[in-house]
Amino acid sequence: MDALLRAAEEPRRSTEHRVGALLVLTTWADSAALPALGDLLGPPERVLASRFGHVDHSFAPILLEPLTGPVMPSLRAALEPMKAGDPNPEMRTAARALLANLDAMAPSPPGSP
Image (cartoon, rainbow, N blue to C red):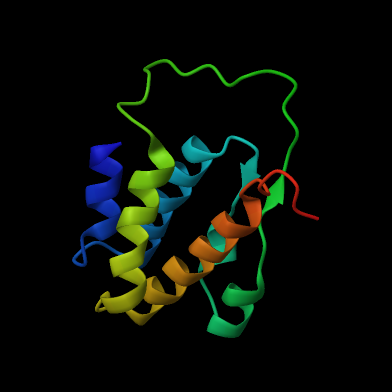
């Protein structure tokens, strides 16, 4: 997980490489998410409006190696500064869109409509 976070945060890597690392982290954080590279790259208007597909698994995913910690908090912690100040405008847009998708995927609190 740490290697993927470092890859996503490294401005010298290609945008595609960095977004790819974010997509892997997203599917680890929520195995029902079906993000694609095209969801986070392209014209900002389209990227910010796109929403990930989802799949309903009837079983828990099996990992060859257990994750080292909770992925979602680490992913969100990496996305917030990326959204605000990454030197690459495509990465700022991708981080904003990914955070919006994560918010949309989050379960609603009990008692909410």
